Every structure is written in C-alpha cells, then in structure tokens.
Amino acid sequence: MKPGEPFILCEKYTKLQVKKEDGTTVAAITKDDWNLADGYTIVLTPNYDCKD
Image 1 (spheres, rainbow, N blue to C red):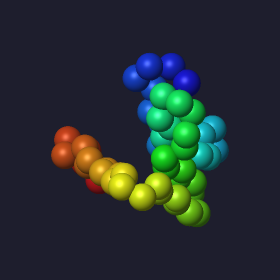
Image 2 (tube, rainbow, N blue to C red):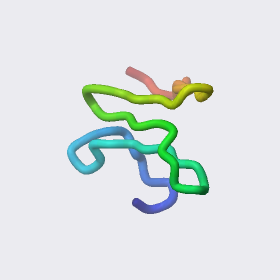
Image 3 (cartoon, one colour):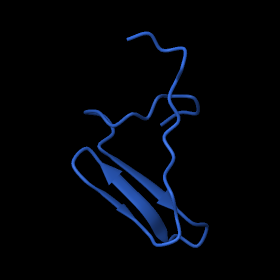
C-alpha cells in the first residue's frame, strides 16, 4: 500500500490491523467481523465532502 492510497476494505485489502510498536495487535477489522483490545476505541470519521 502506498501513502495516500485508499484502504477501504475491498477485494484488494480485506483486513485492517492496528499494531503497537512492539508488534501487539490491538485491532483487527475485516468485512465481516472486528476484534478490539480492551482500552482501545475505533473512530470512523466521515468524509463530509463525499456526495452520495
């Protein structure tokens, strides 16, 4: 993945992982499920410029 490239889950990218510097996974998100470590929050920020 290149900087600035969209990472919305699709055919190309099917899993998003968030890891700490020590390699510990704190969040894993797929199209069908999500897993989040205690004490962490996922915030999805909408693109208000997007026209549906």
